[in-house]
Image (cartoon, rainbow, N blue to C red; front, top):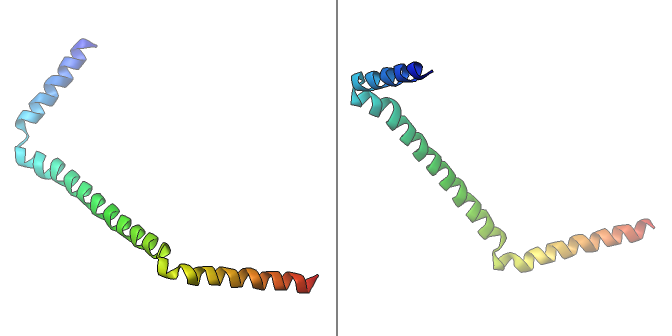
Amino acid sequence: MLPMRLAMGYTLSAFAKELPAWIIFTGIFLPVVLLLLLLIAYFRIKLIEVNEELAMADDPTNAILNFHIRYQKLRSERKRLTQRT
């Protein structure tokens, strides 16, 4: 088992020594960083959208209108129920 580990370590170190740094940078580091930046931008946009929706839902200028609409719905449902019975 130990010779296998040594052989694997030697193979990896030899591969890393022979691999140019620009391949490591452009092939591994750069795509990962770009993907992470893309994910950060996507979630930032989604968070801004949710914040705007919450701000619209909690807008105090619409509170009276929202209350009135709910009151009218409840009132119409009560009238309907009382008319049926």
